[in-house]
Length: 228
Image 1 (tube, rainbow, N blue to C red):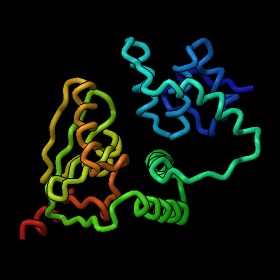
Image 2 (image 1 turned 90 degrees about the vertical axis):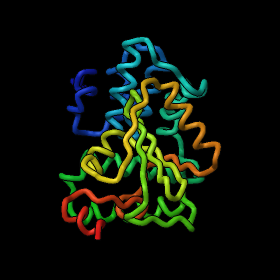
Image 3 (image 1 turned 180 degrees about the vertical axis):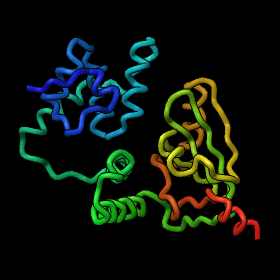
């Protein structure tokens, strides 16, 4: 029987993957829509989002965007005991899942395991972006940071927008130069910015692939090379 607690979940102190049966006791007593949102964040291996969702539940700002989310928990449990139905791959969701897995567990993986996952990410990235998209290390970028973990990342030169998390940005481009950084005070304002970018049809619902879809200098040596 599992001895884990909700605090273990929020502090990322659970080493093994939880099934719904082992996850459910940790959120016992919560409304179903809360359980569903936390379960979805856990399955996507995005701990920062999971904590952000839980905090919004505590301060009363939590909202469910889609009514169907309440039913997702039941559907996922049923899928575990039924024969898997073949369906179209959600490449953006798979790309994000692998990225979060590398972010959390990459240091403990073998070089071969990391290489295999990176190749999958590259494949999924190519299926979710305009094949004509090119990037240069002289492109101008903007990052808009909202009050949650989500950020809007814009290639101003190519007029293409991405979504990313603060943890991803911190890991890859915290010290990057040639980036305009903007803070958004409210989640409503941030979501309006995202909606505007979605409406242009030049929006990708994931972060760019470092070194391929985004190139930014992050060291003094790279700064000097770009300035030449």
